[in-house]
Image (cartoon, rainbow, N blue to C red; front, side):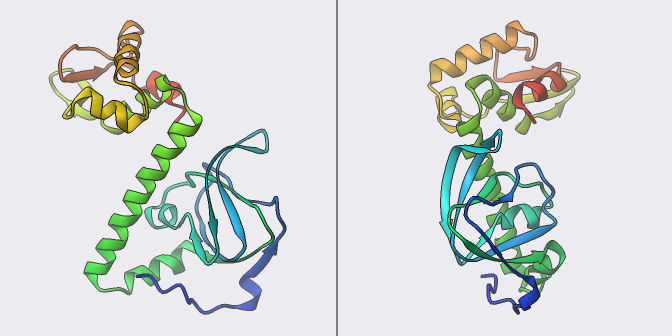
Length: 208
């Protein structure tokens, strides 16, 4: 596992009061935040308020470490629920700790980071997006180039009820959304291969 006892330079330790926004969803992850003490709420903020809470973590805890390792923007908003003590570690230094591990351990850490990121994105999607937006996001995530449709397509490799369960909606709702997307010419085809004739419109619908 990653050594969480990184050398602590007193100048890198910061105290923040309850209510402080520590991370904003969509911002670049140039630092990884190590919560040394205190409680932090994770979720989705609207107009400066945490309107959808995904969960809460207590220090010591690496906050959004997966985003830093994967070079992706933050997936959630984070707000201090209590007074907190933090250490900010640059992504470069954090990644160097992982790269110093044996190769098998590095691969495990990166696999865990990708899995955590996917689960976080799914949780945020269920909290903050309606069924149409969730389905659009799922389609974009599973899209691949396909010569049969002359662009992007999604192959449904699972039963619709399983896909609906992943999205947190009823199978009937999933079928209804696909029908609406087809009527709006955002998807094409009726079998297991769905063409995506207008990916940009799907992105706008998904909010990504």
